[in-house]
Amino acid sequence: MKDYSYILPELTPKVPADPSIYPIGIVGAGSIVRYGHMPAYRKAGFNVRAIASRTVDHAKNYQKEYTIPVLFDDPVEMAKSDEIRVVDLTFPYDEDRLPVIKAAAEHGKHILIQKPFAHSLAVANEIIAIGKANDVKIAVNQNARWSPHYRMVHLLEQAGFFGELYFLEHRMMNNQASQSWFAGPDKWYSNSDRFQVLEYGIHHIDLLRFWSRRDAIVKGSTIFTRKDLPVKGDIAFGMTLDFGGAIGSIVEDNSAAVAVTPTSTFRVAGTKGEVVGESMGAAPHVTLYSGNETQRFELNDMAWFPDGFIGTMGELLLSIEEDREPTISAEDNIASLSLALSAYI
Image (cartoon, rainbow, N blue to C red; front, side):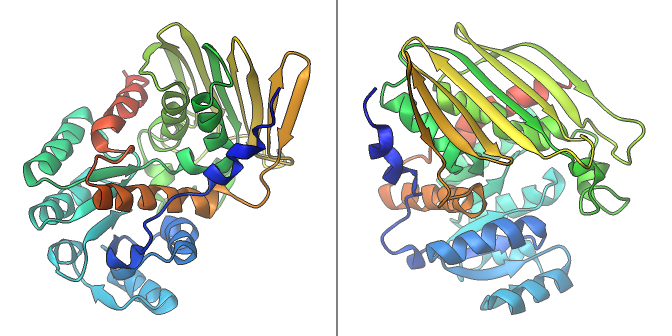
């Protein structure tokens, strides 16, 4: 087996040479902004020019904490403003998002939307049509594509390591349902009618599409809701996918016992080689197997948080600079969304 360490530099998310020329307005001031967006944007040198939130006091706190120059009381007014060129839309509900998306697009702003970018195919198609009508780019924040362990699988597939892919699997065991930030009467996570597949598992559905570079059909799926937990929607699921002959499998439980160490494991196999990896747990790694040879990469100098968020915003900014569609466009991502929504039929 040849030494695949040569692809490691490609794991670093790409950004424009001067990202400061793209002033960003963040919509939302929740935990994902604190732990994902802002650490990433500081590391990458992105220009966060403005912030707005449905809860103005939260936005004021973030403005002060992160020294954001401009505060808006109304996300729609920020979307219209000449202060920004890009809208980073982080809050979860379609009815709150659509007025911001319409205002931003009509005023020539490009948009990055947190996944899932819609909660129905009707709204998804409406968002895509808004982007096309106003000639703006709409990207979806599928940040797992830039998580280093996951991205390495993609780079290996591009390098021809696997040969013909025939098996793609992702398994996750976590215990977020028992954590105070997740469960409670004031938490949108635990109050969502549809959670694990649509809000979380869509990461891994999209990853299998990303790895295979194929679309899929759902062969079967099962969702599970635990009545003994303060969580309204599904908290575990399994899904089997057909990627044009390649087998796809996703199994997740987000209600494991508190004492359990969370894990997120994957296996991707082809006729020439296979990869077994773990992106979360005691020993994250990517291990390559071909015949009786192995190579192991631990990738300790990178992480999903914040590098995944550098990747998504960086990709949108590069698509603006290069005048092309982002690889995470809403038009592409509707295929991942459709697979996720099918679990609830």
